Length: 248
Ligand SMILES: Nc1ncnc2c1ncn2[C@@H]1O[C@H](COP(=O)(O)OP(=O)(O)O)[C@@H](O)[C@H]1O
Ligand SMILES: [Mg+2]
Image (cartoon, rainbow, N blue to C red):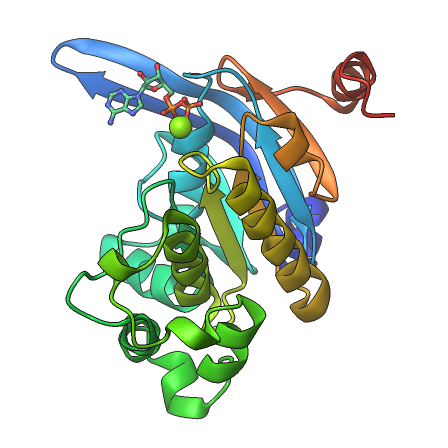
């Protein structure tokens, strides 16, 4: 094992080496990732941008252990999730990853508080040893304290998304993954959700990787990376892109 990986294993939230993903559709191979390389440090808030179909969601699903890569290596919080079996990968996902999707995926029969409590119980870790966040604290931070008895259907889209964020962070995951979290929200609610992600990042040092195709959303992150055709563009291209977009 080379030094870079060894060091990365100890210190970084995410290390990805030459990641390839090919989907098989019938008899056709669809290459989605063609050698992704990225390192994300603990406490970083990274936005991933790129055109539709360039592989953003595939990358996020691989980082979260929802899929197994065709080849390459993925380390999350020091563990090589690309090298473990399915059972182990599921366990690591529960312990280390929080997900937020464009669609909220809340349980319709449970109220806001119980949706969060359930996430705590399923996870196990925070529930057993008390290392997670306090439910009241998270509800307050996400400005849902008045809504805790509401069921998802009794919440606005913005409130539902904030609830799904609360659920995702309640166990203090090593990594919060968000795929277009503001994709179905109006601009006021988008702004609120982004501010809260930023606050979780700053206040708890929550490491976040967020996919977005909205440059304004991306600019709440501490770093923007750009994907094209299954690859992450290198730094120089990235700077050029940012300059073109008037980011600095
Ligand atoms: N489950 C799947 N089966 C087959 N092909 C897929 C699947 N998911 C994504 N793809 C293909 O992989 C490529 C990358 O898709 P995706 O990761 O969803 O991109 P993005 O999120 O950037 O829009 C696209 O060509 C897409 O059609
Ligand atoms: Mg996508």
